Image (cartoon, rainbow, N blue to C red; front, side, top):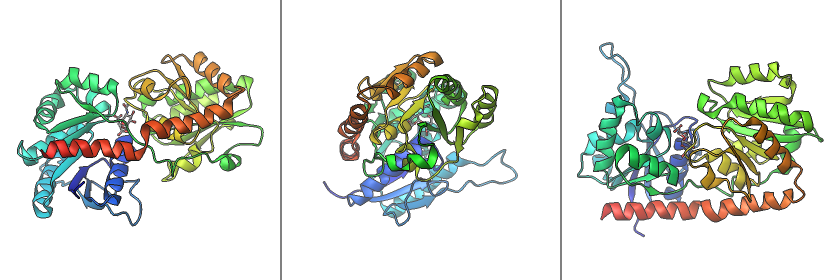
Length: 364
Ligand code: GMT
């Protein structure tokens, strides 16, 4: 395939959409495409010495503005840099406000691809303040993609567009089993349960602590909560209230989550909404089975051979499923299967190829 000059737009912080965009940008650049990544700061997961060129988007503030004008600033930078660099296509991740900003920059005459990630459809996309401009932008784009079938269905209802489903990828050379690191986080006789997220209310981190307290009654285990966010204080409070404080480790975000996730015996996800569940995929690739709530796109990812699904809020079921897996006579096979399954369905090469096909079709 010919080498393309591409612009990708992402949030640089701890969110999954930024990680997906950054990793895609890196893979495309390593394949020989010229890739520019637009974000307000250097994305968290962009490696040092990366072939991807980071282009900063300013957050201009003047006393006359009620706040920084991110959308307008992004539109201006995209328009200017696309011309200067001769970009062939711009691909945004997370529609709010990226789709509208790109539409503002280029209108309909330029190849735009937008990837929907989750709350950009279900929460922000439904907000009357954002819906109209976002819908107009998505309808005008050459292509829209969604990270799961569930999200594509939701987007069709919300915006009347039919996204192409491209699942997220996981890097098998980064996420692999690391049992030798287990002793860094847990005692010899403790099972290590891990959850990783941005601790927003939607992730229900306190529920994970509640399920863990039930698990602790029957098995010696440690819960490691990797990340930070608004629900941390509440999760700590619940751990104290339930008397498991000493068995819960709060681990700050790290650029190397693979070192922690790969050491786990089990991964827990209690989200009330999850279009995909990138961290759960990273766990599977690390050979770590997942117990998760059956919401959004999670059932497309967590199947019975590699984990267990439970109803949202059913903490008894979550604890039971975790205990069942931890005591499963074929746990080593399940672990091996989890990794093999993640590689079969979510290999970066397959996923990158799918995006390149969308780019080719969009370029006409
Ligand atoms: O939509 C969000 O809540 C934010 C977004 C993000 O940037 O982290 O998360 C979504 O995108 C991830 C990457 O595609 C998915 O793994 C998450 O499941 C999804 N979050 C939700 O649907 C809540």
